[in-house]
Image (tube, rainbow, N blue to C red; front, side, top):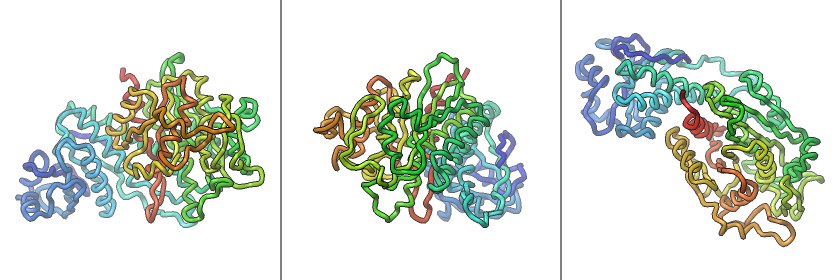
Length: 495
């Protein structure tokens, strides 16, 4: 889909559909008022009959034959003025409605709101990202693929003033990059575990490195043994697939500038090990590598944008399966940091591979390290799917991530990592246990990781509730690629 920006009168542009926003409980102004005049009061009549009331995401599509050059008019409710969340809902509704109409080209008028250049840029980003994401398909594994073309081929964004053009174009550029990152993350997450193995992920990292000038290295199990990554390696013992530690380096800033390190959990399938999961829904455990997939997607997005920042992506990847060689409850392993861990539950394996990857991250002397993981069902119980759980030992880093989440629409909610919870990880036989009991499960998991990040500025995103959707719409969401990309955009210098 090609997206362009124009200051031309939307009513004069030839298109299959003209998309115009209507705010809730406000007078009809801007393009909506112009369309109303051109169509002899059509918009006003729809409002008077309550066919449209401006509720965010509510859509009405009508054929046009006079007054406007577009063949159809799509009125979309924008909700309350200045509310980014409502605008995001409106974009999603417009994209879905337009997709069902068969329109091949459309004009989206941003002039009904967003008169400030910064707001126009944000809206342009949300439109580009939302419309691209709405066209996402995953049919790689089907013998009969959907050969229908993506419905929308061209989208024109109409802005009010010339000074808004540069902001809108930058918004489109960011939206397209984030959409590309989301697609990569979703594709990797949606692939089955027999295809997307640790070795496959390593191959995809090298492919990404070649296409976007990343420095990629892959540590095999022998190298990990040399580094004494006993915790990570213990998880792969029950699998025939060898573990990989994938490292991708993006150098957009000066060589000596400290990087941001992203560490993504890459469990390509998690059966729970000896602590076997219930059979119902176990097929969704292919999504346990979505933290790693989000690192791939974020690196693609920032490389597309050529951000002036240094970023290192580390993805510890393994399977967690039951086998005679697999971890057993009660086993004690030694991490790369030299700390011993009593394994109480083999299904709490994500923290076992992450702790060694976090220790490995120290060698980069990072400005900050952020780990991303589908870590605990307890976080799903606490927050559901609207927000990822955010834990951090640094208030500034936490605030920056929360702001990026709000700005991107990919929200997070801060949770505690107080020392009070550390007592739950006590073990009579080792330095710590890998679980802390039923209460505060997401918190004690984060507290476990905090023991390996004491020398670093660190944050942990528990995405167990946000990384994929279940039910009839089952599939990877690609989150938190938008949050992470926005955080890095905000961090990078613009000059």
